[in-house]
Length: 318
Image 1: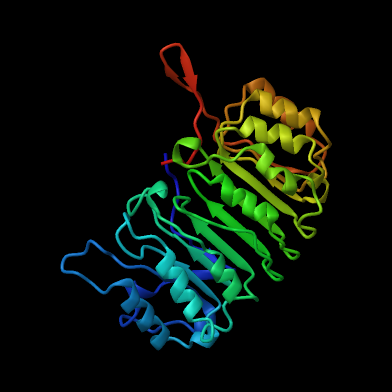
Image 2: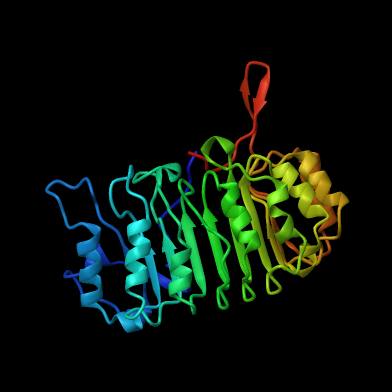
């Protein structure tokens, strides 16, 4: 399953599709938009490649004013990883001096299944932009994220059908003193999501990211195990928002949450796309009835049947 859409905004700026509108209407000011850059590799007749689009973009706007860049399709889905995108961003660091937000892999299902998006080591972008505040990646195939230190990053987001355990461990070993928002779609093992709760331990222990206020551990086939680990995790005390949505959460995981540390200090708890019984959803609502916590228990799912077996699925996999 795959339910991802093009970003509508980044860093509080509306997305503007440069390739679609350049030359057809007046462009916005460089700092007034999140610039979406994408090509159509299968167009007939052929159109410009990403390198040509990138150069035209830098020549058409004031690079020093650009605050946010969204990279969409950069070439054919197969055999074309994001290393060229990383290199172009790194090479432009002396021109994109105001850049504060980057998202790589803004493709919808009609363009590419999320598991077909081929990524690479994306951390050189962080090294090249020490003032970057927001970084997002869609697609886990080939993704690498060795441990780095970054002083100013506030938001880090991974949208995948399978987030490699190596990436989870790299994030957990990183140093991000300003990080407030961490969102990881853990996915399924069949699409590379081979992390376990042990890989999350440094994050869950608390103190690793002192500014962290939102934690999303989402879209996991082991959502019950994740929920059980979170239930006793010291990091929860510093959070205002917890997101365990999109995964295969059952009554077992929900019972762990209810039996663990108090969560009523949270302003928001997101559990949407779940496999909870009606009685369990009632228990959860009752536990938060007077807390003021915003609960999302929408998108109840029923397991698929396969013979005498039941299959509970994540929202985004292939």
